[in-house]
Image 1 (cartoon, rainbow, N blue to C red):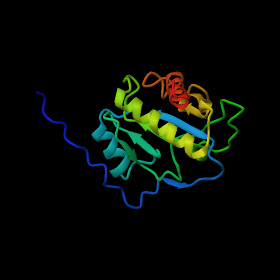
Image 2: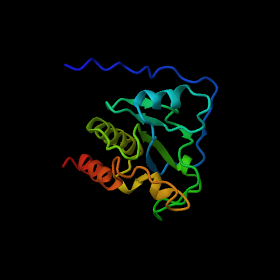
Image 3: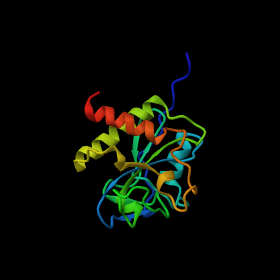
Image 4: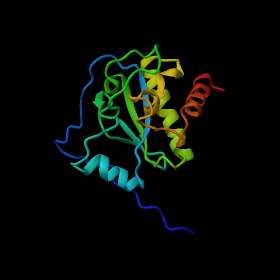
Amino acid sequence: MPPAKKKIDTTTRREGLGNWNKVRGQRLGIMVHYDASSSDAGAVQWMLRDPACAVSYNWLILDDGEVVAVAPAGARAWHAGGCRSSDPRLPYKDANSAFYGIALAAKGTDTATPAQREALVKLCLRLMKLHRWTEVWRITSHALEAWPRGRKVDIGKVYPIGDLRKDVEAALTGA
């Protein structure tokens, strides 16, 4: 039997880092990323404890499906950088305000674990219900929005955006 996996402490937060601020404008959807980490422990260390980290997400999803709050849900997490809308139904000037930022703890060559996929679908559903959104086009990837196009590749192969949208649609419709 393999040794028990050591629990990662996700409670320690960086004090005074402030790599998020006030949302400017209306939330329009959800932007999904991967964080390019080589391990869950490394992702948590970087996002929650390293003062050199200048990026954030609202949530980070670990391999076991644990959802870790990085920035408050109501905050403008610094996850998107320069973006332009890929869909006329999503008009925005500031992607960090327009989209909740969610990252899977993974490298671009990884495939999301089943637990990560399930947690991401549930989180998307929760946010969609909160806003009374019924359209899965509100779920986008950094790759679709980043400007210039081709600047970012995430979420890519980790959990292709088409697959995520299909999974959320199935959960929305109860299929």
